[in-house]
Length: 286
Ligand SMILES: Nc1nc2c(ncn2[C@@H]2O[C@H](COP(=O)(O)OP(=O)(O)OP(=O)(O)O)[C@@H](O)[C@H]2O)c(=O)[nH]1
Ligand SMILES: [Mg+2]
Image (tube, rainbow, N blue to C red; front, top):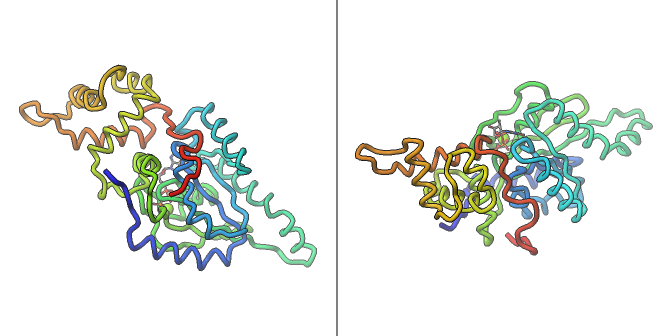
């Protein structure tokens, strides 16, 4: 399965982001902790030019603290500081707020000297479904932006005012082309790709294969299936049988099974699973 997803509305979103980035002082770029390197959309980041970017390692609650540390230090090697967060929590949003304000402290105090109360304009960007709108809502302490557990919930732009910040919620945007299918698969696992364009059964087998290799204990714990020495299809069959994903006559209902298994992972019910703690490809050319 070759995964590519760059529908027409993303061309429009990219254009909108390009136009609005000029109005912004900086960017909050939201990554998903389970596949943070795949979430680095180079094309999008290029649009930010020299503007300061605060990187948020969102959904950190869904991976182990050891993996959070590894990711932090691997981004740090590239000169990037990431702020681990559970975007649904107010206290984590406050840390993001503090980081943003501290990046612009000079600008704010210079404006103050001139008697101006500087309002920072911050764009919140990233690939789909990483929690951009959720982070904004937690920052505001109320539901101001629409959120949802699928790709492409935010359409169009939305400015949201918060104290001395103006936040711009943007729709998630994907790289226009994936030469690198490993990253594409990871983004599909985490729900950044529209499920409607995916073969969910194939995706589930890929997911089970990779999880069996990297997180066999989590599979055993979740499904009571020992993945050692078994093929992904055999694991899938065992899960379908155990969970009763069967048609009449005991044929496997692979479609229902695939959606359920991927949903377990996406909602954090499959244990603390993280697919990337470092870059997978040196050149990372997407
Ligand atoms: N466990 C967990 N779930 C989160 C976190 N942040 C967001 N979510 C969930 O992730 C899903 C996607 O969140 P959104 O805020 O809609 O994501 P988005 O990046 O705005 O998505 P698009 O607008 O589609 O690009 C929602 O179901 C959120 O509740 C987090 O830090 N931890
Ligand atoms: Mg959104």
